[in-house]
Amino acid sequence: MPTETIRNVPEPEPPRLEVQGLTRRVGGRPVVDALSLTIAAGQVTCLLGPSGCGKSTTLRMIAGVEKPDAGRILIDGALVCDSQRSLPPEARSVGLMFQDFALFPHLTVAGNVGFGLKGDRRAAADRVAELLARVNLAGYEAKYPHELSGGEQQRVALARALAPRPRIMLMDEPFSGLDNRLRDGIRDTTLDILKEEGTAVLLVTHEPDEAMRMADEIVLMRDGRIVQRGAPYNVYNAPVDRAAAAFFSDVNVIRGISRGALTETPFGAFLTPGHADGAPVEIVIRPQHLKIDFDRHGRGPNPTPQDGTPARGTVVRSRFLGRESLVEFRMDFGDAPLTAAVPGVFLPRPGTVLWLMIRRDRCFVFPAPR
Image (cartoon, rainbow, N blue to C red):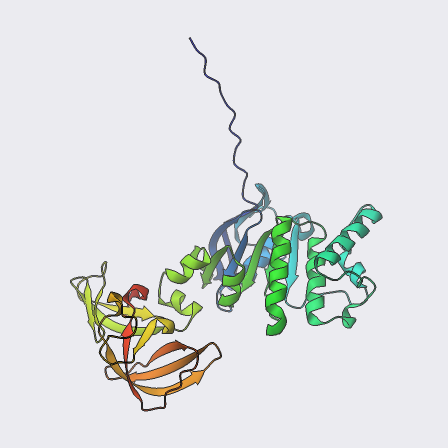
């Protein structure tokens, strides 16, 4: 009788960072409320949300500088914090980067980068030289922080945080102190190095553009809770509610009543399945998906079946923003203005009458607040 070969299947590796039910209360109010997430090695996860939603508090608890009231934190499957015990920050193999860089003014660049390194001096010097070369600061070893630009200081802070080879990098608004001219390039350099090191990254920001540019996964927070998480494309294109959609861009809102899974609007009927008969709904659309019908009859140069019925509006104001123009309309129906984004330069005078159409395939439908 043939014998079967039993193969040993290796168990999957645990996440680099795992947070389970993390909770922090201040004055009896939950600042972070039962938050759970996982981050794999080499993954960049962004905590995104408005000021005061609990992002930085979450980061401080993971770093070990603030103690949670409930929940657990595991790094590579090993428990580092629960309600009974908490490892100190230096025992967690976590790197930290903040907005102010926090460089030691009395130490040279080499002294700052090598500050957290222990053991063999030659190995430490080699690690410092390696990292300064990777952040394009070779030859800056003897300079002091006050001799560096803001962008150079940020790269020194990155090299210092990476020097001990942390398993997790925690970043709290690290690029907000840089001007726009430098920010994009330094973000890209930082991201490339962190990926090469295989470091799990948790980045806190309130800027959607930064989250979209850097993150493998966005965790959208509100009032201490996670309201949505996923890849940037999915979070942007499938928001869970109106507030989530509005966090990434301006939105237009048209209100109506769902009847028989349809809602009638001046732009025609919209499918609203899943909403009770007679329920108020909000149809949400971003300005770039509101189309101007220049021939007034819905037969523009590239008409599509999704464009629906044209509705008439009067230009209130228009602004040129570089890549696009924003045109605000007062519609013949209702009081709420609608804003269209038009690529390039388009600055019609106030009082100009134009017809608009809505891309049905680009709309979101949510229950209206009562």
